[in-house]
Length: 314
Length: 314
Image: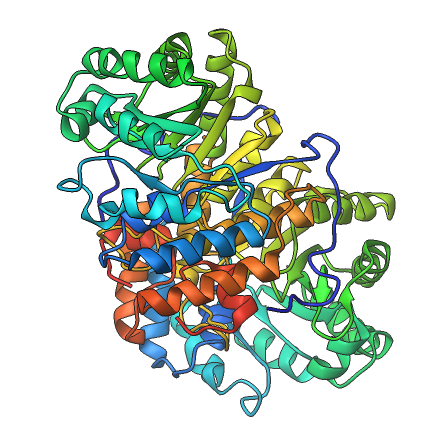
């Protein structure tokens, strides 16, 4: 895919980092939230193309029980197909059984998925926050002992459908406990997309007060209210250098078929290219990959950058 | 329409302004770029509902020749229906004849539409930049003499389909000439949506070097590449306090039927509400207005906030 010549014009901002690591979540968080089940070989090709586009961290799949996430039930078949693709390939594991399956296949990075609120911990994990942390403790310890890197996810960091706004101090205290268990990095999820830039700054300051610098955090924004990229910009200004995004904006929302999922990697990379921030990602190559994937899913990408570059109709 | 309780949580940022004026362009820039022609009475009701939602500046219509913009050919019939709605109602005028028509109907604010690039001046106005400024000179002078407020528009301020990236110094020098003619305010248009936040800062610094402070500028971003709100945030950080937006994101683009027009007023107000920045706009009321208008246009709003609050399908 060809970008408009000379655009976006790179104009650095001295208050922003020079390099950002894009943590690509399309194959896992994206496909997990799509209605259809994508064939294993298509997933493998998707991951290969993402790596070829320059993404160096691609969350590949989830070793959760197939009953809960049928879209990713082929984790065992998929992982060996992509293991040597040349990118870091974290995989989600819900518990020790999932960890065993992932390590047996040679996974070198895992992620555990916690909640900042009791309501979502109950709804998603059927546990209290304390109980879920207790469940993660042996997972993280054994992963670290096996030499694997561990990412923690913390969902509902800004608002929750049951509890409304979530106090930043409580989120930071819970997040701190995931580092205490041994997590190397923590991704702050705005699961229902209600964050705004000042709230992002306040949460990052609360983590700083807990002794967690922005360099150990990632941000994971959803575009439900169109705020994902502005929130990302605010996070970069506070020193965050790892940003989660989903190629083509994969990962829908029950309320709007093609509009309110994850931050699209292309929209993010367009902004970072325009800021002169290095990512290693080739935007034309990535856009072509998302157009190819959109063909398999049978609907256009919700990413505005993908639509603009590819002239896709909505 | 009901917002999620307590959300967005207002968290002010001390580096941002406390109050922002939203310059609503939906009835003019939005409807001008929609395929269908909306009945005059529906337009009038739209403007009344926008005013009732708290928008104090609503660009109502254009007194351009009906041959060029058939969607707004009813300016003469529409304006008297809304004149007393209780909001400022700027109208676009292309030349002295348009000015005469607008003033005769009691318009108190007008806008002229210039270009930062020679290519777009030629394509849109069939004139050079110098020739277009010469055409505006008597329009602005006579409007000011009649006691009207004058807004200038400058399009293609960041990039141009023919010339690529546009040097910020050239944009600021051209914009300065519109102030020299007597314009009270200048709206910087990213007509093809290619701006990024660092570029926004660089352009505002270039205007400052020309003796034009950010307080006299407005920003007008298009969401072609998903950057409109991030660019707005960057502009606020540089002292801009007037932001153009279109209710419901009205104003499509030929390449994507419902995705890449103007910044949606609702997405903007969600962010500003979250930052604790006063606008006077009631987001629930505004969203209901956009849903009502989407019904008349026969397609859902492209605004993510409208979709999320109203549970509209895409």
